Length: 439
Image (cartoon, rainbow, N blue to C red; front, side, top):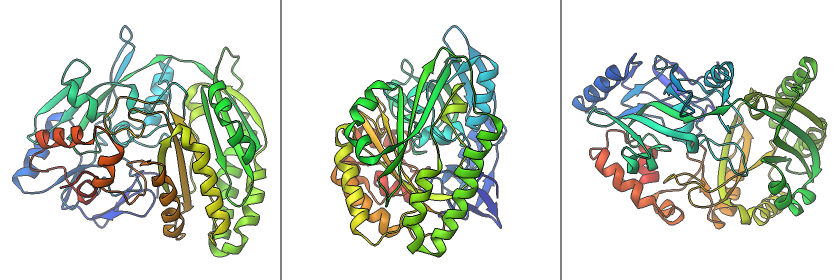
Protein backbone atom coordinates (compact mmCIF):
# COMPACT_ATOMS: atom_id res chain seq x y z
CA UNK A 1 0.00 0.00 0.00
CA UNK A 2 1.36 3.43 -0.87
CA UNK A 3 1.23 6.46 1.39
CA UNK A 4 -2.16 7.19 -0.11
CA UNK A 5 -5.24 6.08 1.75
CA UNK A 6 -6.69 3.06 -0.01
CA UNK A 7 -10.07 1.90 -1.25
CA UNK A 8 -10.60 -1.84 -1.67
CA UNK A 9 -13.98 -3.48 -2.27
CA UNK A 10 -15.53 -0.03 -1.86
CA UNK A 11 -13.98 0.35 1.62
CA UNK A 12 -11.86 3.42 2.28
CA UNK A 13 -9.03 3.20 4.83
CA UNK A 14 -6.76 5.89 6.21
CA UNK A 15 -2.95 5.82 6.21
CA UNK A 16 -2.73 4.80 9.89
CA UNK A 17 -5.09 1.86 9.27
CA UNK A 18 -7.28 2.78 12.27
CA UNK A 19 -10.24 4.28 10.32
CA UNK A 20 -12.35 2.75 7.56
CA UNK A 21 -15.59 3.70 5.79
CA UNK A 22 -17.84 2.44 3.01
CA UNK A 23 -19.06 5.39 0.93
CA UNK A 24 -22.21 5.02 -1.19
CA UNK A 25 -20.23 6.41 -4.11
CA UNK A 26 -16.80 7.79 -4.88
CA UNK A 27 -16.23 10.61 -7.36
CA UNK A 28 -13.14 12.32 -8.78
CA UNK A 29 -14.32 15.57 -10.38
CA UNK A 30 -12.01 17.09 -13.01
CA UNK A 31 -13.10 20.71 -12.47
CA UNK A 32 -14.63 23.00 -9.88
CA UNK A 33 -17.87 22.99 -11.90
CA UNK A 34 -18.00 19.17 -11.83
CA UNK A 35 -17.33 19.20 -8.08
CA UNK A 36 -20.13 21.71 -7.49
CA UNK A 37 -22.49 19.53 -9.56
CA UNK A 38 -21.57 16.47 -7.45
CA UNK A 39 -22.32 18.44 -4.26
CA UNK A 40 -25.76 19.44 -5.62
CA UNK A 41 -26.45 15.86 -6.76
CA UNK A 42 -25.52 14.47 -3.32
CA UNK A 43 -27.94 16.92 -1.68
CA UNK A 44 -30.73 15.82 -4.06
CA UNK A 45 -30.00 12.16 -3.25
CA UNK A 46 -30.01 12.84 0.51
CA UNK A 47 -26.34 11.82 0.86
CA UNK A 48 -23.66 13.47 2.98
CA UNK A 49 -20.45 14.70 1.30
CA UNK A 50 -16.80 14.42 2.36
CA UNK A 51 -13.62 15.26 0.47
CA UNK A 52 -10.61 13.12 1.29
CA UNK A 53 -6.93 13.75 0.58
CA UNK A 54 -4.25 11.15 1.29
CA UNK A 55 -5.90 9.89 4.48
CA UNK A 56 -3.10 11.05 6.77
CA UNK A 57 -5.56 11.98 9.52
CA UNK A 58 -5.86 9.48 12.37
CA UNK A 59 -9.38 10.69 13.18
CA UNK A 60 -12.48 9.86 11.15
CA UNK A 61 -12.67 13.48 9.96
CA UNK A 62 -12.88 12.38 6.29
CA UNK A 63 -14.99 9.22 6.75
CA UNK A 64 -18.46 9.07 5.17
CA UNK A 65 -21.11 6.58 4.11
CA UNK A 66 -22.30 9.16 1.56
CA UNK A 67 -20.35 10.67 -1.34
CA UNK A 68 -16.56 10.56 -1.07
CA UNK A 69 -14.89 13.23 -3.20
CA UNK A 70 -11.32 12.51 -4.25
CA UNK A 71 -9.56 15.62 -5.54
CA UNK A 72 -6.85 13.73 -7.45
CA UNK A 73 -7.76 15.46 -10.73
CA UNK A 74 -7.85 18.88 -9.07
CA UNK A 75 -4.09 19.30 -8.93
CA UNK A 76 -1.47 21.73 -10.14
CA UNK A 77 -0.52 25.35 -9.87
CA UNK A 78 -3.07 27.84 -11.22
CA UNK A 79 -0.69 30.76 -11.09
CA UNK A 80 2.21 32.51 -9.43
CA UNK A 81 1.86 36.23 -8.68
CA UNK A 82 5.40 37.56 -8.21
CA UNK A 83 4.20 41.05 -7.37
CA UNK A 84 1.95 39.86 -4.53
CA UNK A 85 4.36 36.96 -3.80
CA UNK A 86 1.59 34.36 -3.79
CA UNK A 87 0.90 31.03 -5.47
CA UNK A 88 -2.57 29.62 -6.16
CA UNK A 89 -2.90 25.84 -6.24
CA UNK A 90 -5.68 23.32 -6.80
CA UNK A 91 -6.87 21.64 -3.59
CA UNK A 92 -5.72 18.12 -4.46
CA UNK A 93 -2.09 19.08 -5.10
CA UNK A 94 0.25 17.10 -2.84
CA UNK A 95 2.55 19.28 -0.72
CA UNK A 96 5.59 17.53 -2.17
CA UNK A 97 4.55 18.57 -5.70
CA UNK A 98 3.95 22.14 -4.54
CA UNK A 99 7.32 22.29 -2.75
CA UNK A 100 9.23 20.98 -5.78
CA UNK A 101 7.37 23.28 -8.21
CA UNK A 102 8.00 26.33 -6.03
CA UNK A 103 11.71 25.46 -5.71
CA UNK A 104 11.96 25.34 -9.52
CA UNK A 105 10.50 28.87 -9.55
CA UNK A 106 13.00 30.02 -6.92
CA UNK A 107 10.25 30.25 -4.28
CA UNK A 108 9.26 28.55 -1.03
CA UNK A 109 6.67 28.45 1.72
CA UNK A 110 7.99 30.04 4.95
CA UNK A 111 7.37 26.99 7.16
CA UNK A 112 6.03 23.46 6.76
CA UNK A 113 5.28 20.25 8.64
CA UNK A 114 7.60 17.26 8.84
CA UNK A 115 5.96 15.24 6.06
CA UNK A 116 4.78 16.37 2.64
CA UNK A 117 2.60 13.49 1.43
CA UNK A 118 -0.69 15.26 2.20
CA UNK A 119 -2.77 17.34 -0.19
CA UNK A 120 -2.70 21.08 0.40
CA UNK A 121 -6.39 21.15 1.37
CA UNK A 122 -6.18 18.11 3.66
CA UNK A 123 -3.11 19.49 5.42
CA UNK A 124 -4.53 22.96 5.97
CA UNK A 125 -8.10 21.89 6.85
CA UNK A 126 -6.81 19.88 9.81
CA UNK A 127 -4.22 22.43 10.99
CA UNK A 128 -1.00 20.68 9.95
CA UNK A 129 2.02 22.55 11.33
CA UNK A 130 5.76 22.39 11.77
CA UNK A 131 7.69 24.22 14.44
CA UNK A 132 8.53 27.91 14.55
CA UNK A 133 9.31 30.83 16.81
CA UNK A 134 7.64 33.41 14.53
CA UNK A 135 6.38 31.35 11.58
CA UNK A 136 3.14 29.46 12.11
CA UNK A 137 1.19 26.57 10.56
CA UNK A 138 0.68 25.98 6.83
CA UNK A 139 -2.87 27.36 7.16
CA UNK A 140 -1.52 30.62 8.62
CA UNK A 141 0.30 31.16 5.29
CA UNK A 142 -2.99 31.14 3.35
CA UNK A 143 -3.94 34.43 1.65
CA UNK A 144 -7.06 33.25 -0.18
CA UNK A 145 -9.45 30.29 -0.48
CA UNK A 146 -11.99 28.98 -2.96
CA UNK A 147 -14.78 26.91 -1.45
CA UNK A 148 -17.78 25.01 -2.84
CA UNK A 149 -20.55 25.45 -0.28
CA UNK A 150 -23.58 23.28 0.50
CA UNK A 151 -25.81 24.87 -2.16
CA UNK A 152 -23.21 24.18 -4.85
CA UNK A 153 -22.06 27.79 -5.18
CA UNK A 154 -18.40 28.76 -5.36
CA UNK A 155 -17.27 31.18 -2.67
CA UNK A 156 -13.94 33.01 -2.71
CA UNK A 157 -12.59 34.47 0.50
CA UNK A 158 -9.61 36.44 1.79
CA UNK A 159 -8.93 39.14 4.38
CA UNK A 160 -10.88 41.54 2.12
CA UNK A 161 -13.50 39.24 0.58
CA UNK A 162 -15.82 37.30 2.94
CA UNK A 163 -13.35 37.89 5.82
CA UNK A 164 -15.46 36.05 8.40
CA UNK A 165 -15.38 32.91 6.22
CA UNK A 166 -11.64 33.39 5.65
CA UNK A 167 -11.03 33.57 9.42
CA UNK A 168 -12.56 30.13 9.88
CA UNK A 169 -12.17 28.26 6.58
CA UNK A 170 -8.36 28.22 6.62
CA UNK A 171 -8.76 25.41 9.17
CA UNK A 172 -12.34 24.46 8.30
CA UNK A 173 -12.34 20.73 9.22
CA UNK A 174 -14.34 20.07 6.03
CA UNK A 175 -17.36 21.47 7.88
CA UNK A 176 -17.93 24.65 5.87
CA UNK A 177 -17.63 23.30 2.33
CA UNK A 178 -15.19 21.63 -0.05
CA UNK A 179 -11.99 23.62 -0.60
CA UNK A 180 -11.13 23.72 -4.31
CA UNK A 181 -8.13 26.08 -4.42
CA UNK A 182 -5.76 27.79 -2.00
CA UNK A 183 -3.59 30.89 -2.39
CA UNK A 184 -0.45 30.79 -0.24
CA UNK A 185 2.04 33.52 0.59
CA UNK A 186 5.49 32.56 -0.71
CA UNK A 187 8.96 34.08 -0.47
CA UNK A 188 12.22 33.81 -2.41
CA UNK A 189 13.87 30.43 -1.95
CA UNK A 190 16.23 30.43 1.04
CA UNK A 191 18.65 28.08 2.75
CA UNK A 192 18.32 26.51 6.18
CA UNK A 193 21.11 25.09 8.27
CA UNK A 194 19.94 22.16 10.36
CA UNK A 195 21.79 21.19 13.49
CA UNK A 196 20.73 17.88 14.99
CA UNK A 197 22.23 16.63 18.23
CA UNK A 198 21.41 14.47 21.25
CA UNK A 199 20.75 16.29 24.54
CA UNK A 200 19.70 15.03 28.00
CA UNK A 201 15.97 15.45 28.75
CA UNK A 202 16.59 17.48 31.92
CA UNK A 203 18.84 19.91 30.06
CA UNK A 204 16.34 20.47 27.23
CA UNK A 205 13.58 21.17 29.74
CA UNK A 206 15.75 23.49 31.84
CA UNK A 207 16.99 25.41 28.79
CA UNK A 208 13.86 25.20 26.67
CA UNK A 209 13.00 28.92 26.75
CA UNK A 210 16.52 29.80 25.67
CA UNK A 211 16.62 27.15 22.92
CA UNK A 212 13.26 28.40 21.67
CA UNK A 213 14.36 32.06 21.73
CA UNK A 214 17.71 31.47 20.00
CA UNK A 215 16.41 29.41 17.07
CA UNK A 216 13.90 30.14 14.30
CA UNK A 217 12.74 26.52 14.37
CA UNK A 218 13.43 24.32 17.39
CA UNK A 219 12.05 20.85 18.07
CA UNK A 220 13.06 17.73 19.93
CA UNK A 221 12.17 14.09 20.36
CA UNK A 222 12.18 12.48 23.79
CA UNK A 223 12.56 8.70 24.00
CA UNK A 224 10.32 7.35 26.81
CA UNK A 225 12.05 5.04 29.34
CA UNK A 226 15.24 7.09 28.83
CA UNK A 227 16.59 10.48 29.84
CA UNK A 228 17.60 11.13 26.22
CA UNK A 229 16.35 13.46 23.52
CA UNK A 230 17.35 14.29 19.98
CA UNK A 231 17.16 18.04 19.24
CA UNK A 232 16.82 19.81 15.91
CA UNK A 233 17.50 23.50 15.25
CA UNK A 234 16.77 24.97 11.82
CA UNK A 235 17.95 28.50 11.07
CA UNK A 236 18.27 30.58 7.92
CA UNK A 237 21.69 30.53 6.39
CA UNK A 238 23.72 32.56 3.88
CA UNK A 239 25.06 29.24 2.59
CA UNK A 240 26.84 27.62 0.93
CA UNK A 241 24.54 24.66 0.32
CA UNK A 242 25.87 21.56 2.08
CA UNK A 243 23.20 18.89 1.78
CA UNK A 244 23.42 15.59 3.61
CA UNK A 245 25.61 13.25 1.53
CA UNK A 246 23.72 10.53 -0.33
CA UNK A 247 25.22 7.67 1.67
CA UNK A 248 24.97 9.46 5.04
CA UNK A 249 21.42 10.51 4.20
CA UNK A 250 20.43 6.98 3.28
CA UNK A 251 22.02 5.64 6.48
CA UNK A 252 20.38 8.17 8.85
CA UNK A 253 17.03 8.78 7.15
CA UNK A 254 16.27 5.47 5.48
CA UNK A 255 18.28 2.83 7.33
CA UNK A 256 18.15 4.15 10.91
CA UNK A 257 14.99 6.32 10.95
CA UNK A 258 12.88 3.99 8.83
CA UNK A 259 14.46 0.54 8.27
CA UNK A 260 16.12 -0.34 11.59
CA UNK A 261 13.52 1.71 13.47
CA UNK A 262 10.74 -0.38 11.93
CA UNK A 263 12.49 -3.64 12.86
CA UNK A 264 12.85 -2.32 16.43
CA UNK A 265 9.11 -1.52 16.45
CA UNK A 266 8.23 -5.07 15.37
CA UNK A 267 10.49 -6.50 18.06
CA UNK A 268 8.92 -4.21 20.66
CA UNK A 269 5.43 -5.18 19.56
CA UNK A 270 6.24 -8.90 19.85
CA UNK A 271 8.16 -8.52 23.14
CA UNK A 272 7.02 -5.42 25.06
CA UNK A 273 9.46 -6.16 27.91
CA UNK A 274 12.31 -5.38 25.50
CA UNK A 275 11.03 -1.85 24.74
CA UNK A 276 13.04 0.11 27.38
CA UNK A 277 16.28 -1.52 26.20
CA UNK A 278 15.36 -0.82 22.55
CA UNK A 279 14.55 2.80 23.49
CA UNK A 280 17.99 3.25 25.05
CA UNK A 281 19.66 1.96 21.88
CA UNK A 282 17.34 3.94 19.55
CA UNK A 283 17.91 7.18 21.44
CA UNK A 284 21.66 6.85 20.91
CA UNK A 285 21.57 5.61 17.30
CA UNK A 286 21.34 9.02 15.66
CA UNK A 287 24.57 11.01 15.94
CA UNK A 288 24.97 14.79 15.75
CA UNK A 289 24.99 16.28 12.25
CA UNK A 290 24.81 19.66 10.54
CA UNK A 291 23.73 20.33 6.96
CA UNK A 292 22.45 23.22 4.81
CA UNK A 293 19.77 22.86 2.13
CA UNK A 294 16.60 24.38 0.66
CA UNK A 295 13.63 24.44 3.08
CA UNK A 296 11.62 21.37 2.12
CA UNK A 297 14.76 19.21 2.16
CA UNK A 298 15.33 20.29 5.77
CA UNK A 299 11.81 20.62 7.20
CA UNK A 300 10.42 17.36 5.82
CA UNK A 301 11.59 13.77 6.04
CA UNK A 302 10.30 10.40 4.84
CA UNK A 303 8.06 8.52 7.28
CA UNK A 304 7.68 4.90 6.21
CA UNK A 305 7.06 3.35 9.62
CA UNK A 306 3.28 3.42 10.15
CA UNK A 307 1.93 4.57 13.48
CA UNK A 308 -1.07 6.02 15.28
CA UNK A 309 -0.68 9.47 16.80
CA UNK A 310 -2.25 11.86 19.30
CA UNK A 311 -1.05 15.45 19.55
CA UNK A 312 -2.10 18.32 21.78
CA UNK A 313 -1.22 22.02 21.80
CA UNK A 314 -0.71 23.39 25.31
CA UNK A 315 0.17 27.00 26.22
CA UNK A 316 3.91 27.32 25.57
CA UNK A 317 4.51 28.37 29.19
CA UNK A 318 3.03 25.04 30.37
CA UNK A 319 5.36 22.84 28.30
CA UNK A 320 7.96 21.96 30.96
CA UNK A 321 5.38 20.97 33.59
CA UNK A 322 3.34 18.98 31.08
CA UNK A 323 6.35 17.02 29.83
CA UNK A 324 7.62 16.29 33.33
CA UNK A 325 4.17 14.93 34.25
CA UNK A 326 4.14 12.80 31.09
CA UNK A 327 7.56 11.37 31.93
CA UNK A 328 6.54 10.60 35.53
CA UNK A 329 3.37 8.90 34.30
CA UNK A 330 5.31 6.65 31.89
CA UNK A 331 7.94 5.81 34.51
CA UNK A 332 5.34 4.84 37.12
CA UNK A 333 3.17 2.83 34.75
CA UNK A 334 3.54 -0.56 33.13
CA UNK A 335 3.36 1.06 29.71
CA UNK A 336 5.98 0.16 27.15
CA UNK A 337 6.36 3.07 24.73
CA UNK A 338 8.58 2.36 21.73
CA UNK A 339 8.01 5.62 19.79
CA UNK A 340 9.60 8.96 20.70
CA UNK A 341 7.48 11.91 21.88
CA UNK A 342 7.75 14.87 19.50
CA UNK A 343 7.79 18.46 20.82
CA UNK A 344 7.33 21.55 18.62
CA UNK A 345 6.09 25.15 18.97
CA UNK A 346 3.97 27.72 17.14
CA UNK A 347 3.24 31.41 17.68
CA UNK A 348 -0.32 32.57 18.31
CA UNK A 349 -2.41 33.02 15.13
CA UNK A 350 -5.81 34.50 14.26
CA UNK A 351 -7.54 31.43 12.77
CA UNK A 352 -10.80 30.60 14.57
CA UNK A 353 -10.14 26.91 15.32
CA UNK A 354 -6.38 26.80 14.96
CA UNK A 355 -4.73 24.89 17.80
CA UNK A 356 -2.58 28.04 18.23
CA UNK A 357 -5.54 30.45 17.97
CA UNK A 358 -4.84 33.43 20.23
CA UNK A 359 -2.04 31.79 22.23
CA UNK A 360 1.63 30.87 21.86
CA UNK A 361 1.64 27.09 21.81
CA UNK A 362 3.81 24.03 22.34
CA UNK A 363 2.86 20.74 20.72
CA UNK A 364 3.33 17.38 22.39
CA UNK A 365 2.78 14.38 20.11
CA UNK A 366 2.62 10.79 21.34
CA UNK A 367 2.80 7.86 18.92
CA UNK A 368 2.43 4.09 18.95
CA UNK A 369 3.47 1.63 16.26
CA UNK A 370 0.52 0.59 14.11
CA UNK A 371 -1.14 -2.55 15.44
CA UNK A 372 0.12 -2.00 19.02
CA UNK A 373 -2.57 -1.32 21.64
CA UNK A 374 -2.39 2.43 22.19
CA UNK A 375 -5.53 3.22 24.22
CA UNK A 376 -4.00 2.97 27.72
CA UNK A 377 -1.04 5.22 26.84
CA UNK A 378 -3.12 7.77 24.92
CA UNK A 379 -5.80 7.90 27.66
CA UNK A 380 -3.19 8.55 30.38
CA UNK A 381 -1.40 11.14 28.22
CA UNK A 382 -4.68 12.85 27.29
CA UNK A 383 -5.58 13.23 30.98
CA UNK A 384 -2.35 15.20 31.51
CA UNK A 385 -2.67 17.24 28.30
CA UNK A 386 -6.28 18.27 28.93
CA UNK A 387 -5.42 19.32 32.51
CA UNK A 388 -3.27 22.03 30.88
CA UNK A 389 -6.13 23.23 28.62
CA UNK A 390 -4.68 21.29 25.71
CA UNK A 391 -6.24 21.53 22.27
CA UNK A 392 -5.99 18.30 20.24
CA UNK A 393 -4.82 18.32 16.63
CA UNK A 394 -7.97 17.92 14.50
CA UNK A 395 -6.44 15.12 12.45
CA UNK A 396 -5.03 13.04 15.30
CA UNK A 397 -6.56 10.66 17.84
CA UNK A 398 -8.44 12.29 20.73
CA UNK A 399 -11.67 11.81 22.70
CA UNK A 400 -12.76 15.47 23.12
CA UNK A 401 -16.20 16.81 22.17
CA UNK A 402 -17.97 20.11 21.47
CA UNK A 403 -18.52 20.83 25.19
CA UNK A 404 -14.76 20.62 25.80
CA UNK A 405 -13.86 22.68 22.72
CA UNK A 406 -16.25 25.49 23.64
CA UNK A 407 -14.16 25.85 26.82
CA UNK A 408 -10.68 25.88 25.23
CA UNK A 409 -11.52 27.87 22.07
CA UNK A 410 -12.75 31.42 22.84
CA UNK A 411 -14.12 31.72 19.27
CA UNK A 412 -15.79 28.31 19.10
CA UNK A 413 -19.32 29.78 18.86
CA UNK A 414 -18.15 32.00 15.99
CA UNK A 415 -17.22 28.90 13.99
CA UNK A 416 -20.45 26.99 14.70
CA UNK A 417 -22.57 30.07 13.82
CA UNK A 418 -20.76 30.33 10.47
CA UNK A 419 -21.38 26.63 9.87
CA UNK A 420 -25.10 27.16 10.59
CA UNK A 421 -25.12 29.83 7.90
CA UNK A 422 -23.07 27.98 5.25
CA UNK A 423 -24.34 24.43 5.86
CA UNK A 424 -27.72 24.62 7.64
CA UNK A 425 -28.74 21.13 6.44
CA UNK A 426 -25.41 19.60 7.54
CA UNK A 427 -24.52 18.24 4.09
CA UNK A 428 -20.86 18.00 5.17
CA UNK A 429 -21.63 16.38 8.52
CA UNK A 430 -20.22 13.05 9.68
CA UNK A 431 -19.88 11.32 13.06
CA UNK A 432 -16.62 13.08 13.85
CA UNK A 433 -17.95 16.58 13.16
CA UNK A 434 -21.11 15.78 15.12
CA UNK A 435 -18.90 14.99 18.13
CA UNK A 436 -16.43 17.89 17.87
CA UNK A 437 -18.79 20.65 16.70
CA UNK A 438 -22.10 19.45 18.13
CA UNK A 439 -25.24 18.57 16.16
